[in-house]
Amino acid sequence: MAEFASARASITGSAIPIAGYSSGAEHTFDPQAGVAESAPETEAGQEGGGNTVTFGGVETFSKTNSSTAGSTVGALTEDTGMTPISQKVTSELIAAGGADSTVPPMETPGPNTLQDSQTKMHINPDVVVERNLITKPYLNAVIIGHLACGKSTVSGRLVYECDGIDEELMTKFEREANLAGKAASKYAWVMDKLQAEREKGISIDTKLRRLETRNYYVNIIDAPGHIDYVHNMITGSSQADVAILVVSAKEKEFEEGVTHDGQTREHLQLAYAMGVKQLIVVVNKMDVTKPPYSQKRYNFIEKNVDLLVKKAGFDAETVIYIPISGWMGDNLVKRSESLNWFKMWKIERKSGGASGKTVVDALDAMERPPKLERYPLRMAVHSVYKLGTVGVVAAGKIHCGFVKPGMSVTFGPPDLKTKVRAVQLHHDAVTEGYQGENVGLQIEGLDVKDIRKGFLCGETSRDPPKKVQLFTAQMVILQHPGVIKKGYTPMLHCHTACVPVKFSELKERCDRKTGGRMEYSPTVLKAGDACVVDMVPSKPICVESFFDYPSLGRFVVRDMKQTIGVGVIVNIAGRDPPQTDDDKWAVGTVPFARRPQTTGGRSVTFSIPQPDEFEKPKNFSFQDEETFRTQSGKLETEL
Image (cartoon, rainbow, N blue to C red; front, side, top):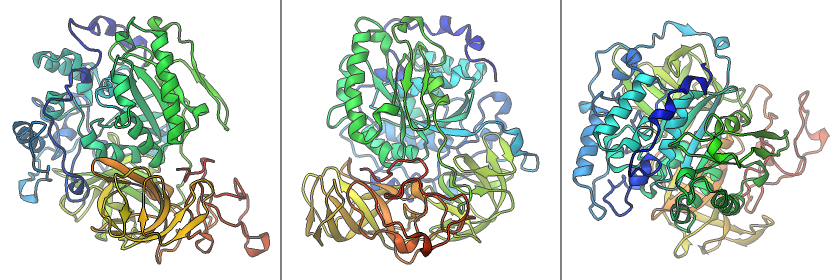
C-alpha cells in the first residue's frame, strides 16, 4: 500500500473550505426540516429492508472495476449513486416527507420486481486467492455519534487518505457535490450513497468501506446518527470490534449530543451492550471552534465525555481521545500542525500500553477479538443480493468458525440447506473465510427472496442454527415511562435480527450490585431493575446462548424510539452446548450443567468444579477461577 501522507500531497489545495461552509457534510442538516421517516421498528427486521447491499463487502470503487457493482441488484447507478430500486423508494419517501407526515415503511421489493442483471461478475469464483497471500488480519470499526457530528465526513476522508478509493471516484464525488450545491459534502458522499441521504444530509443505512493500515485491513462501518435509524446503528455495532465515537466540538452541537435524549449517550450504551469493548473518541470540527483549534474546548469535551464513557461501562484507562477535523484531515493519518498542543494519546491495558498521534495509529493499536475458529460456523446475514451469472450472494460477518467453498450450510430460522459455491472477501474469491471477516457466500439452489437480513448461517453437519421458541434472559431495565408487566411486547435487536418479543414470564428481580435474588415472580418491573425473564419471539428468529456464542447472545430491547433495556441470553431450553475441537472445555464455553439459571446483577458467576470432577485437556486454564470471563478478560455481563 502506498504511504499515507506522501500519496496525498495535492489534497491541501482541494480541501480548503469554501465560503459559508460548516465543517463537514452533516453540518447543514436542519433538525426541524422534514426527514424521511424510517420504517417502524416492527418492520425493521426480517420482514422489512432485509435485502440491501449498502452494507455489502463486494462493491468496487473505480470504473475500471465496476462490473461487479453493476451486476448486483443493488448496484449503484452512475448518475444517482444508488440502486434503481432504492432510487424509486427514496424518491417516494422524499415526496411524502415532512416531519409531521406519515410515510409507509420501506418494504423490500418483491421477487417480481427484481431483475437479473446480464452483466458478468468481475470476481471469478474459479480463480481463488490462497489465504497465505492475505498478509493482514481484518478489523471492524463502527463510526457512531450524534446526528450532524460529521461521522460520514470523517469516514469518507479517512478512507480516501488511506487509499480506500481511487482519485477518479473521489473526483466524481466532488463534481457531483459541487453540482448539487453541497461542496462540503464530497467526503460524506463517499459513504452516503442513497439519494435521500445526499438530499437530507443524514445517514440512513449502514455502509462499509475497506482501508489498509500498517497492521490491519479495517472495515469502516458508517452508522446513522438519526434517532429514527437506531436499529441500523445496532446492526452496525453488532458487526464491530472497535467503536469510533465522533463528538462535535462546535458550539451547542456537543451539548445537544450529551443531553438525556442525545445520541452520543445512547450510542455509547448500545455499542457496549452489543459487545464492543474498545473505544476511540475523536473530537471533530476542531477547525470551527472559537477560537479555531481551541485546546480549552477540547479539554472541556474530553472531561465530560469521559464521564459518559465510564457510565456506559467502558474502561476509561483504555479509551483513546484525539482532536481532529474530518474536513481538513487533521490528525487522521498524519499529525496536524494546527493541533500542535496535542502531543499524543496514551492508554494502559492488561496486555500492555500503547501510544500514538493519529486515528490510524489508534486503529493499529487495537487488539483483535478472541479467536473462536474451532467453534461451529455462525455467520449473521446483513444483506442479500443476486449476481447475474452466479446467483444469490449472502453477505455477513463470521462470528465464529470458518467457511470454505463446497461446504454444506444451513440458514436459520427457516432451516434452508444449501451449498457454498464460492467465498468472497472484499474483491477476491478466497479458499476460506475466518472469524471476524465480512464475507459474501455464493450459494446454490436458493432465490434472493429466500434469505433475509437477520438469518444465521451454520454448517449443516455441525450444530446448525435452529429456530428459537422461548429463551431465558438476564437484563437491566434502563428506562421506561411506566412499569413493565407480563405480556409486554417490545422489539428485540440481536446480532442483525430485529423481531418483536413478548415477556411471557417475569421470573426474578435481582440486586444490581450483588446479583442476589431479591424477589420471585415480580408482578411489575420498573426502570433500574435487574431481572430474569422468559421471552417468546413473535416471529421466527435464531439466537444463541451467551455462554455458547457470546456475540450472538447479547441483545437490546427498544420501544417508543428509546432503549428500554440491555442484556444477555442465559438459557435456551433443550439446547446443548456446542462441541469444539477441545470438546466442551474450550475457553468461553460453560458446561451446560454448570450454567446459572439466575444470573441478574453485575456478573455471571458459577462454582468451579473440583479437579476430580472432570479431566481438563492439556494447556487449558481458567482466566479467573471465581467468575466467568471470556477471552477478552472482561466481565461481559457488567451492565
